[in-house]
Image (cartoon, rainbow, N blue to C red):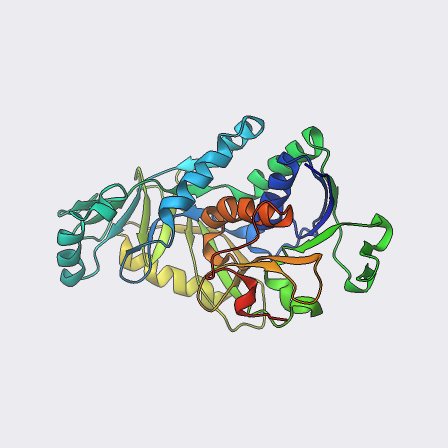
Amino acid sequence: MEQKRFLIVGGGLAGSMLAARLCLREQDVVLLDDRDPHAASAVAAGLFNVITGRFGAKSWMADALVPALRSFLEIPAFQELNTFVHNSLIYRPFKTAEEYNKWTARSEEHAYKDWADFLSYPQYSDFIKNPLGGIMIKQCGWLDIPHFLQKLQQILSEQFKLEIKYRPFEEEGLDLAKLTYGDLGEFDEVIFCSGYRTRDISLFSELPIIPNKGEVLLLEIPDLDIPFVLSKKVYLIPQGEQKFICGSTYKNQFDDPNPSQEGKEEICMYLEKALKVPYKVLEQRSGIRPTTPNRRPILGTHPEHDHIHYFGGFGTKGVLLSPYFSDKMAEHLLGEKQDFLKEVSIERYLSS
């Protein structure tokens, strides 16, 4: 395979996963990571869940996405990354009798049998408000994203010669004619994995990347001991030692990227509707997700610049989407396969 030199702009989950796919294909990769404290990868709880949405539907492409995540973690060079992956059931209580009745039938459908179990009775009713029971979602869990990325980048730099530059991207440093960037020299391909900051890059400013602010709380709950993640409007993820991560909010309109009193109050309001036991807020965090109008990522090549590409818009599902689509993007960049699913192709927003 011909070796190319790639510049990846953005060291979050999307950029680091893509760097891994290219390194595995023995490519020369430079990763530009500005370590933005407001980026979703720096804050997100990393939950991966296959039954989501208001009505609890099976996630888009779950049958392909979950195996892709497992397969990535089985790559011999990445075995240490499993330390940061916490497989867990997710318990989703029923909100209404209508939802209960819907799942009575749905639980027998072949499409759902491997993904969720129907529970017609309350779970841990001394601690959780769930009089109608719920569903126990399988093949799920959460990823410690900050430590996962730190270890992944370390492995790639030590074993695959990934070159990492911890600095912000400056568009004036990119020469489109020569395809050079600042003091880093010449590249064959440049890929933007720039998250919510895509709107600041003129090449892709027309893409409908919607910055979505999310806030989470770190809690102490001495009287709660549950062997699953609780999902009841907000999620509650056990961390051990009576600590839990709880979130999240979803705000497309905001002025301040930092944690807010409004966000804290919103999470606490839903938490009190879910729990019967007291809790203590220890810490509050916030991050900004790169979302899209139809909640599908955006992949592809710029219509006017053949060697400039985009890979992003993963929103709240980056842990599930990134392993699968990073492989597809690598195929595209190396000419192994040119076409994407229409649902994710950049052509739906940018055309020549």
